[in-house]
Length: 585
View 1 (cartoon, rainbow, N blue to C red):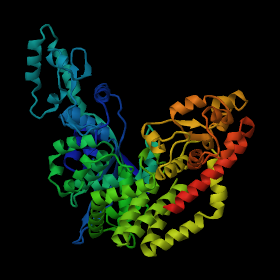
View 2: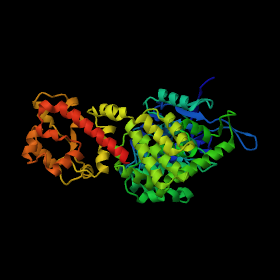
View 3: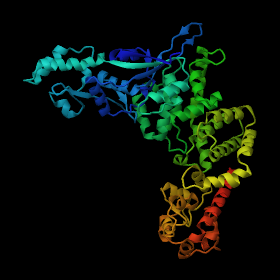
View 4: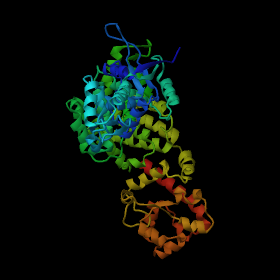
């Protein structure tokens, strides 16, 4: 079986096929990421006859309609939408959405005497030698003879024959042929992803969530465009709430849709500890509503795939879109979203920047929505969610290729007693061996990563005071972008022969310390700076502070000769603190 076929299409034919819906550009409503200079360079390349790369399309499988007839699948552009958008912006005058969801024109100017393109500026607009906006040349009503006469009247002593030749060359861009690679409808999504990755010269990865978004946006029967926009707008506004007003002012069609009402609250919200991107949103909805984890199956279901009959059926596509939209509405529900983020905050997870496994938080939200639908008691529901999110973070349950694990876990939580699946998972993964050995090994690192942030979550949850920093809390220091400092100062260790960063930057040597205290600590041995600070080991405030920061009181007697002993003791204290934290959730 041939995996693809190649063909050439004139630019004008390609734009017509897109306009008529034979080729869909589902990304067209998403922000245009090219800058105007890149659009100018594209036009210049085409003018000089340089290749601009292939457009890659994937033909949807044929679908059996409810009346038994077959609907031929349209082609979806999976690579090249930015180039196509650039062409329509420059040649057709189409407005584009920028990164802040503001509509804007990208006007490209052209000097036929110098045969030079530039991005439009007011100065070029006033110059008689420049054509301010080349889109006028490609309009159906354009009259080249009249245009040249007008141009020559404003630019005396200009060679009219030369200008005529140059303009004909520029207008001829619409007849340039572009290579199109059409991937077979029989290909599996994983194969299409691999093909894309291999032939994309920039090495840009294409996720299966991108295919989901393309599939949704190219569907005109089941509100695909509005669903796609709701996902995009919601995620963008979570990360940048101020841009939501631009969305509201520029997309009147969506504002009048029922989905706008479901997400409109997000424009007035604060920053949350969970800020999903569209790929995360898709994973949550799929796990929650379809009880599955393999995103390739969602593309197939939205295409109407009957896995048993091995054909596409319209009623399956219709039902899949309906379920997906229901999941979208629940995901974007203000009470649901804020209740889930409050669960995270109750665990000390208050800042999204401290999360290294977004899949754990994604699954946590899918689990929250599932248990809510199952009408599990609120306290029990929140307990299960808290414990399973933290179990997942601690064990890196959803790191790497996580789809199979998500698939298994969501089915278990759905089909069995949720509390039992939690208990079974804890028994399997949080044994004494994990707490006494595995966790200690993971704490033996100089990398500030997941395990270090989990330790900080314990301190935030317990409202712990920073090390020797009465009365400032760890969270306050993090809010103020406080620094992480060395308990055994690194310059002190260097002076005594420990020069390897991997040694003095061990996370067991880190603590949140006020800058003023750190200055007093300087590069002294712990037993020296504790004495300088006037602290004693039998002071109840000191004892409490050392415990909150998992620092051994033996530090009062320690110098460089005790550094390795200190790291060993502190890792055990940190592990014990994390364990106590987990079982308090």
